Length: 365
Image 1 (cartoon, rainbow, N blue to C red):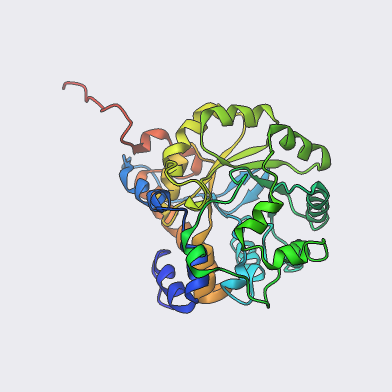
Image 2 (cartoon, one colour):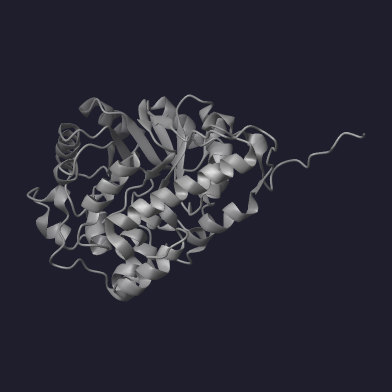
């Protein structure tokens, strides 16, 4: 496949997938303003490159929660990957492992934590929702720990599901050959079969969720907890008070509340409120190495990619996901060289200029 950038996989995926499945992955909430803005906002951040620096050796490696990875680009949790490709999460897990980066498995995955672990070594996180049935949560978290997963990513932006009109129009349902493997045999079969029906999922989710439940999660596991779905300084401070190990600035890929800012626009507020106490990551709209650099310059410790994984998976299976990770790695490397940065710690706020920066007045000569 002669693909030269990440964006090209979306059109290939659209061709290969049924309309129902493509729309399931591609669509956002309501007017889809946030979905589009996640991408568009990156184009309003510009570089201030530094020249004539020795960039003969470039190091992209970093650590996340003390775990060494090859680059600050990780895989976000996306549900139902077997809808994209028969190998689903197996292929994604192998691609992430080959690239030396972290995969986050969705709790709504079509492969279980044990199946993903069986693909071989790799650093993996598990994304969860806090269901009304806390026993389900406890069991799943325990299984993840036993399967060698290294962190729990708690999604906190979904007390109810956002309104995705494409799903309503298409009457989205899961095909019989696809199973929500993390919940097999957990009295969930009948609900999970219809998990795509918003009312069924809304019936499972705990709408009364508060910060005390984040504290509860820490009592049932020794794994670090990362909260995903923070967009404000206020909630950043509350997350740190609640003892989280990290924060992912996320708007759920524009699938939950429409008209929240692009994550790259919300990132700096969260980073400033965190004051370096916990690492801050972001997801949403990352399609280029330049996007990754901009996020790092605004203080992110790394980024997560979601749709690029699903679309490349649909287009070309494991090889597609490997290629996406390689293209983003190589683009980030080139961006760093052209901005005069040899390592991630060389990337500073001065390397970018945003709409909210004060104009720089050059000193009179």
